[in-house]
Image (cartoon, rainbow, N blue to C red; front, side):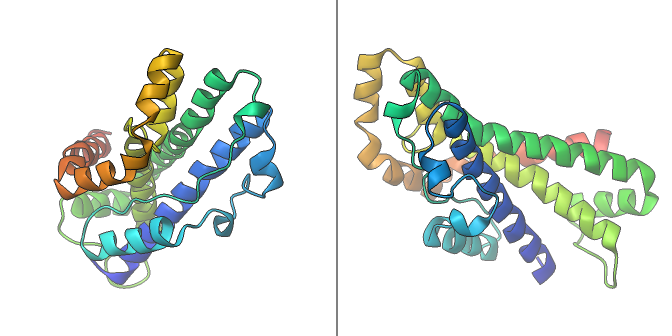
Length: 227
């Protein structure tokens, strides 16, 4: 993997995390809680969301290791007392982050398919790139660079969405599940929150997350090759 490909991946994951967190804040604001808005978190400025470990250190380490980069940002503050229907609205706020990433991924997919159909060079580059026979060719190839950017925008946004939908606190999937469970069961379920980060690290260490991420990569490649 060359330096350009690494830079593209890091840029895309930073953008994906920023969109994700801003969407949480925007949803909370629309549902009656202005906390994130007051604190400047409803913004696409990545500086407002950066967590030194989750947004910087972890993605860099994963890219250097040749693994797909993912991470997290500073949690968006939500005051449930401001929400009109706390259980329902917290579910919607939790779902807003992954949904925003899927919207970005779908937009990038549509753009890439249009670009692929209009440019034989891009089509050839994608076939070469997706088969693992190399990254960007030497020289200045803006359309090929854009194609690589769009590919990683698809893959990493879907990856981030799926990762956050895992129902382990503090990931978004836990907020969605807690909004579905009966109130007493939701409280019992939330009791594992202090151990959530360790559970996620365990899944990563055991390679279980790769069993989730790998099929995503394969499905995206199949779509791009078929269309």
